[in-house]
Amino acid sequence: MRSSNPVFSRRGFSRDTGYAGFNAPPQAGGAANPYAGTNPYADNATQAPPQYAPQTRPMTMDDVVTRTGMTLGTVVAGATVGWIFLTQQLGFAIGAGLVAMVLGFAQSFMRKPVPALILAYAALEGIFLGALSGYINDLPKMNGAPMQAVLGTMAVFVAMLVAYKTRLVRVTARFTRFVIIAALGFVLLSLVNTLFMVFGGGDGLGFRSGGLGILFGVVGVVLGALFLALDFKQVEDGIAYGAPHKESWLAAFGLTLTLVWIYMEMLRLVQILRD
Image: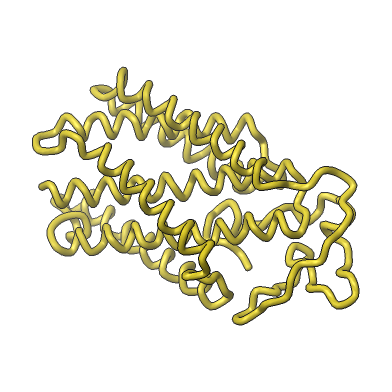
């Protein structure tokens, strides 16, 4: 199984780390290690992961929570700077956002997580989000919209976490294929709409205003929530199969990307509803 998250979809967690147990053959009667190239997540799969003896400390949930807190904290710090100093200088903020995108792609294609790169991405992405949010907050009828988007993002995260832990949402191979196909379609429509806006003016195909814009925004938020379910599953499996602890940085990076997606879609949705 691969998450639709661009970090996780490329590689899951490391396959070539050389840690005993992470790439070791399964014990008799145990499930195959998914990170060794198999896929035990076919529909209705119920086998429990085997227990291995890694040569180094494996990743734990505390590792994931700590690294995610550090990464999101850096985003918040950057957003504070952007909100206070760059609300009226969107050109600089957009530049920071573009650099953040490049750093994000660079980390996605690296074989190992680079904490400095991840934190640099988080800081620059935060600056962009803070400046954009401050600009929108100063528009007529938009005061408080960013805070509503933050609360909405938190609500989506908590709701999906509860749904995942209670197994109301089950991540299977079919679920994963559906989310990936839906995400590709959503991104393609967004790109087409952007091209029409750039070359045709106005709101393009109308995906960012009116009733159609509201529907499109809701779809974007729902897709973000489904991304979270895939990310939760990937983290859970990495811990169960003994991924090395350094991979917690990848988990933090992937979760941050998903939360940024949800916030952006939520902010656009709030804008449309208020307008």
